Image 1 (tube, rainbow, N blue to C red):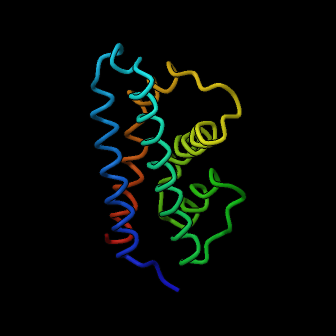
Image 2: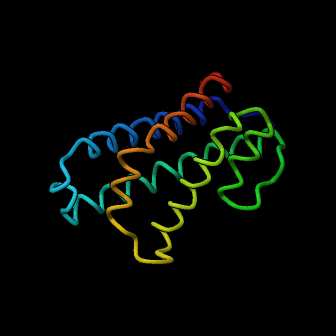
Image 3: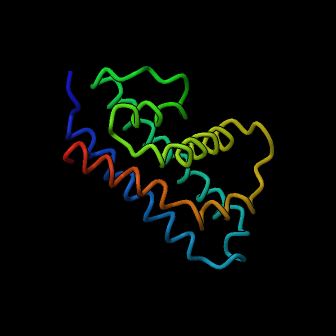
Amino acid sequence: MMVDPGRVRTLLDRLGEEIAHLRRLASLPDEDLDDPDRMAAVKYRFIVSIETCIDVGEHIVASESLRAPLDFADTFASLAEGGFLDAATVPDLQRMARFRNLLVHGYQKVDDRKVVEILRTRLDDLEALRRTIAGRVGS
């Protein structure tokens, strides 16, 4: 089985759309992000974005017969081992996968201030995956 460039392109396009929405939300003043409905939107868009990164990774891992990841976060290490991601980006993407787990499963109360900090400082991690995968898969 080989990577399906159409599937990867579709996922990366979705990721790009979600990142654009997150960037728009990141530009809002703090008081606007204090609104519970806006904060819910930020969290939802993060979940979709990060899950899309994982979906792309799982598709490539399966298609290229890379090492099976131990968990979602390990998907990014497997991609780096297979030459699909730069190893330097793996820790940041693994933190994003863990952040997604926190948002989805609510292991502990999510600190909205931390969500805003991630919103304003870590979107480039998602964009780096999008650009790198697009360049290496030819999507």
